[in-house]
Amino acid sequence: MTILVYFGRLYDYSDFCTKAFQKSTATVSSCLILLADLRERLVNFDFDKVVEYAKDLSGKYEIENFDVRDTIRQRRLPERFREGYLNSSVGHTNASNFEELEILLRQNVREILAELDARFGTDQSGIMKAADCCLPRSQNFLNKQELNTLSELYAIDIKDCEIEVFRSFIARKDESQLNTLIDVLDVIDKDIFPDVFNLYQVLVTIPQTSCKVERMFSSVKRIKTRLRLQMTTERLNHLALLSIEKDIAETLCYNDVIEHFKQTKHRRFLL
Image (tube, rainbow, N blue to C red; front, side, top):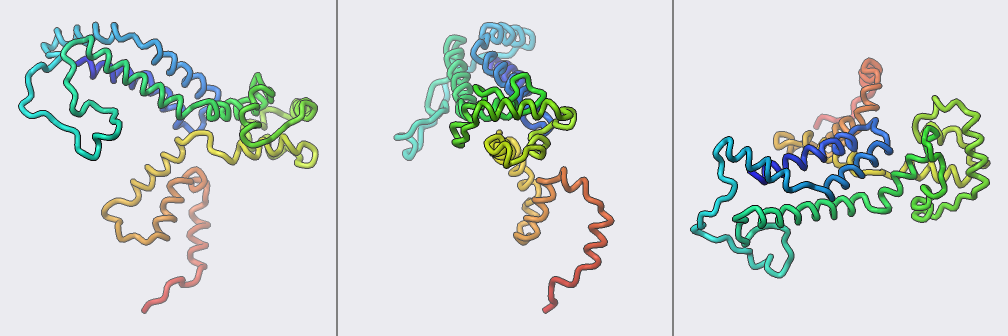
């Protein structure tokens, strides 16, 4: 029961971050705030409240918190895994009290924090902060300190005078028309602001998170089911492209597509 309550609390905390990172219209600043909040909640995770709540549920529904029965057969590690390192409880004794269980759960929280640091470390968060401060509506618009990580990674050295002139240039534009990085990139003259242009070009090219890539893989798995194993690569690529770029596909006029298909010649020959 304690483990169920523990993971339920973790999922409740992380669900907001999950929705934000998967939402295509979410701002980078809101994602960074939710990520920092999640990390703080994990660092200050209150195990005592989880234990007390689990005890109340166990007493209410008469559920045993720990299974202390002796197992007839002990599982052993396979030979090929004995020289390696495993993050699992295979071959270990089960927790028989709340103290032992708390040790295991704290170890799990540390592993989650380590995974967050690996996935959203200094470089990754630095790129996200740089993308956020490159939007005109940001309070730190083109802050040199926020751009340091991106500048060092891609060797883009922007002069302070170029940043100041570009800020004044954007201030004279209609900011309501500059909602995305691509909108800002469209109004930059490469010959006048070469380094700023390179900075925005990098930001709109590189993926800032892996969420979209993961959604692509999920789309391919839904398309190529076991009933479609005989599908040719060409057809699979076309269906996958329609699913992945569905935002563009939804803007197409179906009548124009059908008309174009009618006018094409036969592309396959009957044998």
